[in-house]
Each structure stands twice: as structure tokens, then as C-alpha cells.
Length: 615
Ligand code: ADP
Ligand code: MG
Ligand code: ZN
Image 1 (cartoon, rainbow, N blue to C red):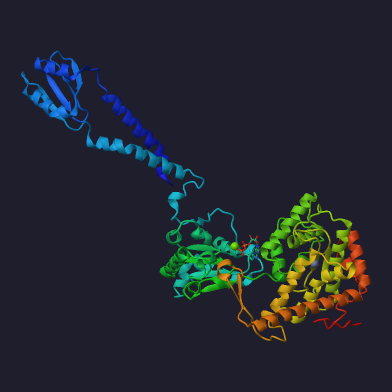
Image 2: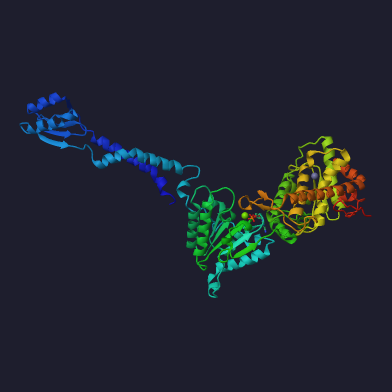
């Protein structure tokens, strides 16, 4: 049913070949006697010839003699007229026929086109049997996948921590289940629902759960499917997709990652936006084209609503926009509960505690976390997942897999231990830093060692004091190396980069510098194309540029001075921490509490290098 052409092609070709052969076999007649022209003319003179058929095309004469022998003779083209005359004049008369065309027109046309037909046939066959399995003939078709009715159902109960979004979508589901209820009240249901939020927060999951709840056909396509590689295809794919959906109405069309087609028109780097613009235009046309009560609802998801074309967002199109944010503590706990289903957890595992330890984790991160824990438990041949595995899994998700095989020489180990101890000590002592949760010198991912500080609650805003203290903590590692070894290593490059970025943002973005005041300095652009900052355009004078530089330097030097103060004041604790790290490699909260007992948390008010060490 799908593509009759391909399956019929080979039998067809074989058939044609067979017919050609068969006809040729039929047309080979019984043997004839070959006569030279002179012999033939002699026979004519002698009146022995009864019939003569002149085949002009082949320049031969076929016929019968009076004694019934069949003959064939060939002649030279120039003498054709003469020959015909001679035969016509002969006595007794000869039955002469002149055949100017040896074969029927159709037959010869067919014969001459046959090789071409065969080639074309072969080509189509090869293209169709390529790795894409016949995609070539179908590029204008929508690639939407229709979720099958018997596919595993996702429902709203699979989505946790996104209650507002679910509430909004419930209305859409109600409409799809019973459109007449809304229509009789004259209510118009939104044509388009846009879900946006950071990656991994469950946008795709929510859309699928709408399909599962409403039980209507669900056409899902990714924005990049529209664009792909054939120019001019996107628009026809959009058309085809909506065609299918309208036939199946009530139905949901879900365009995932819509930013792939829906970016601002006429913006971005490089050229060649025509294709995308046409696709977007077609999408807009389709959205305007369908009657709100036709029962087709367009859902879309993106994590970059800021780069969408304004035309998509105007009322009457995606008029329902639902934000899905990173989950808060309670949301995280609920998500963990969903994903803990079917995973045997030990009694010492508290989902509430995990939720508190994972600020900034998305739903996808949390799902991944529990899965990692289960994998670790399996690797350790446990039958249940214990708190230990969950802890390890958190570290794994945050910092990457452990690299125990990377063996550090004692010297390097000492440097790394002091570096991490420096971070930890400064982070502990400064009032506005997050509590230190764990310090380790076991390599993970690309880091040689790491210090994990976790906020006590989810952070929405960051204050200037917090940023200043964070700068000091970031520089604490390198400062410890300086103080202890009088030598610095390349290990702090990442710290320095982070510190510089924070300081620059404080000056140019947050208006946190007294000198430069409340001003946004410089414009960043390029988001439209790469979704990333690709250029920084100064909109200030060279004097201001110099001031920015000196402000950044002042902030960093101040933070460095703070770190020096903390580390020299509490040098004995620094040494104790480093020694413990070399010995145990990883220090947990309890160890830290013991080792840092002499350093009251937030014991000093520091900041901007004007450090005063308190009680
Ligand atoms: P995105 O927002 O990037 O589309 P997905 O919907 O693809 O994110 O989420 C990826 C996975 O993360 C889901 O399949 C699900 O397992 C998990 N997940 C994300 N958010 C939630 C949530 N709110 N509740 C339950 N699971 C979630
Ligand atoms: Mg998604
Ligand atoms: Zn560091």
C-alpha cells in the first residue's frame, strides 16, 4: 500500500525483456537462399522470380522463386530505383511490394527508448533501496509520528512538580474530550499552547501526557524535521502535517523544539534563511487558517521563547503560554517520588533530603540521578538502593564519573589537597557562602578535586555580598597554593575564569560597582543564531573600558585579600583539612564539622578586601 512502484518495478522490467526476446524469436523465419545481385537479376531475366518484397531500410529483397524456394538478396542503396523499375518491367510480371520502413514506428521507438527506460528504472530502484528506505520520493511529506493508541500511555500523574502547568492543560484536555460543551457556550479554545522553560523540565513529557489524557490522535514532530536538508520542503511538510491532523480531528499537533523554525525572521548570522522563513510563514498561515473549533490544537515546546518570532506569539496563535520552571524543593521531592516507583529504596534513603540537596536540578536530572543510583546498586550487587548509592549518584550527576584510575603522585596530591582545603575553609568561614557539603580529591570528569557547597534553600536572587564572598571562595584554592607552596599551578585556570566572569557581570550587568553605577555596559548579541553570546559590542568610551577593567581587578583583588586573611588566620585548620584529605580523599559533612570546629561559620565579616576578623 505504501509504495506500489518499488515492488512492481522489477517484475515489470523482467516482463519487458521477455516480450522483446519472444518477439525476436517469432520473427526469425525459415532459412532462405542467399543470391548475389547478379544471380538475382539473371533469375529475373529468366522469369524465375514470382514475388519480390523490397525492404528499403535493410537494402534487401526477399521473395519466392517460381520453384517455391525463398531467397534473399542484398543490393546497394543507389540502385534501388533502377532495381524497382527492372522488377516492375519484368515479364512475366513479378509481384513487387516496396517496404520503406522495416519495422513499425512504435516498435522502433520502443526499442530505442528501452535502454533509457531501463536506466531510469534502475536509478529509481537504487534510490529507493538506499539507507533511507525510500525517503527520496517522500521529502515533501510530513515526518510527524502519530502516537499510536496502544503506545504506553503517559498521563498527568507521571508529571510531578508542575501543578500550574497541568491545571492549564487540563482545560485543553477537557475541550478535546467534549468540544460541544465549550462550543455551546460560545467559548473559543486556544489554538496554540506554547510550553517553555529550561531543558529537562518535562515539556515534552507534558505534551505527551495531554495526548494520553485526552485520547485523541497526537501528531508529534520536531522543529528540526521541518528544516532538514531539502530546500523548500519545510513549508510543504507543515501543510501536509496539518492536512493529516484536520482529517483526524479532534487532534493535537505537537511541534517540539519549535525554535528551530520559529526564530526571528531575517536575523542571525550567515545567509540562507529563506527556507526557514517559508516554513515559519506556512506555519503562521496554517494557524490562522484553521477554525478554532475544528478541533485541532497546536502545542509547541521550546527552551528559548526569547528568540521566537513575535508573529508566533501574538494573540490568536500561541495565545496560551505556559512556563515550566526548574522545580522547587517540593517539586523535586514529588518528581523523585514518581521516578522512585519500581525502585526498591532502603529505609535510610530520604527523598526529602535528596530534594534538598539538589537545588537547580531539573526533572530530567532527578530521573537520571535515581537511575544512576540503581545502576550503582546493581554494580555493587545490592538488592536495594541505599543512601550511599544515592549520594554517589548525586556526585556523579554534578561532577561527572569518578576517575579512580587517575593516580596522582604524592606531590600533586598534596597540591590538590591544599587547593580544595582552601576552597572549603574560605567557603566555611565567609558569612554569605553556601555551606560546604563535601570535599574530595578523587578526580571526577575533568576536575582533579572538587568542593561541593549547597545552598540551604533554592536561590532566586543573589545579593552583592553573596557574590563577593563567592569570589573569595573561588579564589581560595589558588590562594592556599600560594600561601603553602609559594608556587602556583595551572590547576586554578578554571577558578580564575569563573571569578573573572562573576566580577565582569557584577560590573557590566548587575550595576554592582560604585564607580560605574547603574548602567548596563556593552551589548551582547548573537543569541538569535547560536543561542549563545557570540559577540560583545562595546557601547562605552575607552575611558569607561579602562574603568571597567580596574573595577574588575579591584573586585578580584579584594576577594583574594579576603581569602588570604581567612587562610592565614586559620592556617592550622587549613593544614588539618589538607592532611585529612590526603589521608581519606573524601571528607563528608561530619568530618568537616569536626575539622572546622575552630572556625565558626561566618565568623568574620569580609568583603571587598576590607576584612575584619570577628570573634
Ligand atoms: P524537556 O522539557 O526538555 O522536553 P522532557 O519532557 O524531555 O524535558 O523530560 C525528560 C525526562 O525527564 C522525562 O522523560 C521524565 O522522565 C523526566 N522529567 C522531567 N520533568 C519531569 C516532571 N516534572 N515530572 C516527572 N518526570 C520529569
Ligand atoms: Mg523536549
Ligand atoms: Zn579550584
